[in-house]
Length: 412
Image 1 (cartoon, rainbow, N blue to C red):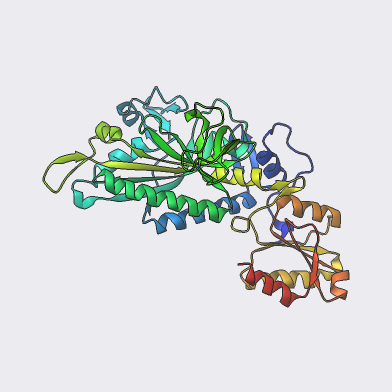
Image 2 (spheres, rainbow, N blue to C red; image 1 turned 90 degrees about the vertical axis):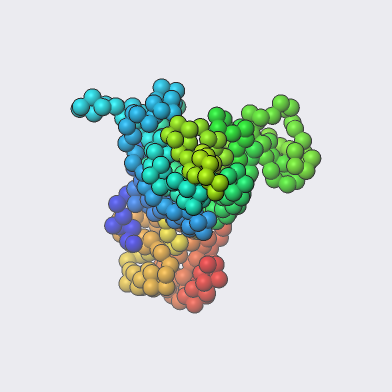
């Protein structure tokens, strides 16, 4: 893609109404644009990153055997009254139609999913079922000042599994936890498995927390085995690790995922039952698995940035390479090289802008944070080389095209 044709532009000044690092950098770099507190437009660069994050999530959900579907975001009032959450869910957006019917914008989807499944589950032969969606959620947050980390409109993957018994549910729970670890590893995040309170529906849940000063949670994590516990469960100020007895360290953290076994309350609310092998009628046993994909995007920026901009991991970067054309004399060669990258399966952003100085192009490249920067100038062409620099490295290296493509192939 030619940068001169890119919809968004970089900003010289940081938006004054943004406090969070992720929002400040992503806004300046042209990934997002703020419409309202906690509500953002994902511009083309930002959408490319979000799509790559969600692509990784989809691949691992598919490997887990879950099926993707999409539920409505506009919920009638009645199912929320059945669960008694119409008034108790304090972040619920409520609205009224012209016919005076009342609705909610979905912050979560139990109230929609359980009535749906009453049409598809009747016997133990119909179980287990695992379904997930990646959808925009809405929550009327009292405080939305953390950019993509806490939005009023945000993206989430929510997976639900339904089983004939606790044993089968627990097996799936363990498999889902393993899938989450794979997801975060592929995303480049060191997500700590963190024991936490399960709230209303279970005694405990398992959170996936990323240690980061921008986080709203506080955890104690073991320096030896890397397991963690949410501070809300801890009585002692500096507890020993429950798993290995090692010493722990306190840290701020960002919750990027949460899984927990549901009890049968929702099944009771909606009469979601099945006939077992012996003919008895039982309530289904369920598990719930959430992962905030837009929050992951904000977390990546909070973790991977420097004073110049973002340092995207390759798996989620909007492009793999950023070609900088320095001087109009090399325009034809730079354009041809960018096409060669594309033909080789390497996504590249080609900075062909004639109205920007070399310094401005370098600054924009650092701000946007694409993993590989390739500079093509009259000097490099004289030497029949290209200048290559990884975003996380300090110094560029001169190499010929064959060396570069060999390095890219080895880096896949």
